[in-house]
Length: 498
Image (cartoon, rainbow, N blue to C red; front, side, top):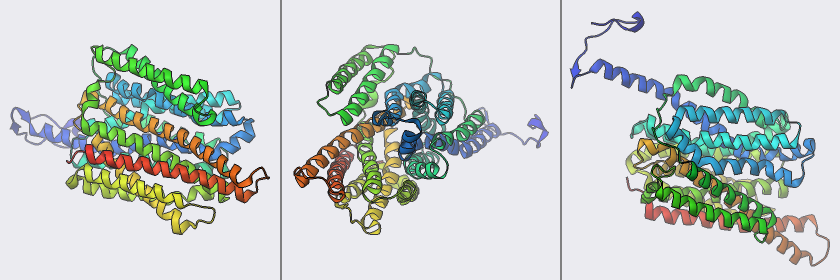
């Protein structure tokens, strides 16, 4: 009888079942359970770090502008450079995990994100800061889709995967909320540089822990679809750029129109290439699954609703209700609490109900909360309207993110787990980017028209300006709520019943 490894404990008699040692089976199961205890927090921390950066920079922008002398256009690109690189490369990041190994891809993404955060926090030149923001987007594009694919490959279907999905979904919503809070706190209490530097110790810890906690997948032995990756990335990047530019310069801007037309042509070429190549970067069969395609569309519509809702709420609190960055950020704390509570509730329910009713409830809650924000005005009481709406959005995020992520990975084989999760992240990022850019343009046009009608050539008073801003925000909230209603309708037709 062999000795116990390291002499830690005596070996026990081994029974054989089908020629396999039961002691060996128990050892593997025990090792898998031990890994899951540490793997879930690590995966969640990586997801939180990436999503945190979507919003944490927003409340630091005025301080960055004052210190570095940024123009208004340069200030906008501090947000857009990250979004452009992130959304454009998500498909590549998802497939990279399938090809070269998911742990390796995650670590490369975390390393790039952490190094870029350090450079951004120390930057003394706007050009360096802009380049660092784009590099952060590249790192996040590699790390984000890998986190979800690790969950689906490390945890078998059942309670273990459900718990991991709950944590993943909660981090996606919680990162957005904490970003709004921490951005204001760090900027006022320390410096805008700390919205970037806070990522450095987190990234270093993740890089040190990943090799010890996460097993490495070997990757698939396949050729890289270089042409498909190039056209797909160029198409998504052109689309995101065109929408971002149109949001600031208008849809009649020739450069915006050219970018969108080019994006359509590139994406058509991408589909043709993927249909003909032997080993495509994106197997189009993934989109022929009704429940999975529905989950992708729901994700795009919900992010197109949520990102603008958070954006306009933040502006209303600061620009109209005259709250400082910290005070405005703290108003969003109930949203984070709602995300966590409803994500935990979703975990308990999903094992018996399946994702379908939960996606329906989550999208309905999001739609009601977003539509209720139409009532927001300059005299709105926080407890009477804003607090219930923020809690409603938190409930929608907590329920839908968890259940919809599970639906998006329905019947996905392990070799395609990375690209399937990359598709989900891509739909979310592109939906959120298009939502903010399009609704910002709508809100600006409505506000300008309302102010012109109210002043009729006379000087504008602060009250008239605030009223015009709220008119524009109200129109944006109405459209955002309509997008959530559309997500609800798609869920009724496509969500898996079990």
